Image 1 (cartoon, rainbow, N blue to C red):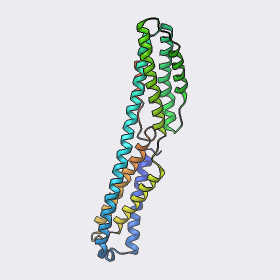
Image 2 (image 1 turned 90 degrees about the vertical axis):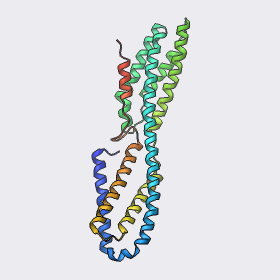
Image 3 (image 1 turned 30 degrees about the horizontal axis):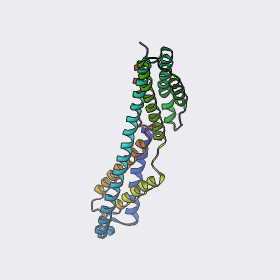
Image 4 (image 1 turned 45 degrees about the horizontal axis):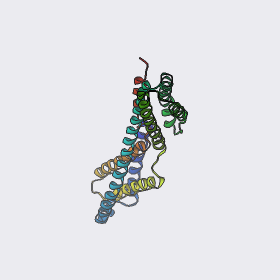
Length: 253
């Protein structure tokens, strides 16, 4: 994944390459000679531009939706963890104390280790062992009163939710746009910009501005798709704020 500076550098290089291609076209095929083909080139550019705009818009919407889903899932996982911590007060004192220790350890593991591991595309595993200990703790509980039995039931429900949200988080951290779609996006962008360069404009300066603006816009959208595509990596990523807030909520008074 690229950071912000690398993204900016890549966008600048993309715009520069577009302008160099336009300069090469002007050198080998003068604008005056291309002008007679403007009707054909304009029709082609209209079709290409519309088709590519639909593809770009759909892909940007898709990755942004997935990014928002990853944020909501992380928040739900942290909420389930806090709920589990609070339900521990209704369990048998010894089991409740052990469950509180495990929930705090889970939150610390996510913030201190797993978020960083996901940022470098490493599959986190520390919370798996902690979750297994939680299951053993709750399944060994034998409620002696209606309050304890109710707390056990609700705690098991929250632990089940926690495990589900964790699995979703791991899947989302490894999800990627398929390579074939990146091929479509990159080739489509190159073809669309090339068609813009072929237009035989009467005003050379205005044509340069148009090509630069067009390539800049496409490069920005592609960079945004690349960053948002991996919700736990890169310069734009899901924050661990929900778990940091959970750590605060689970502190002993």
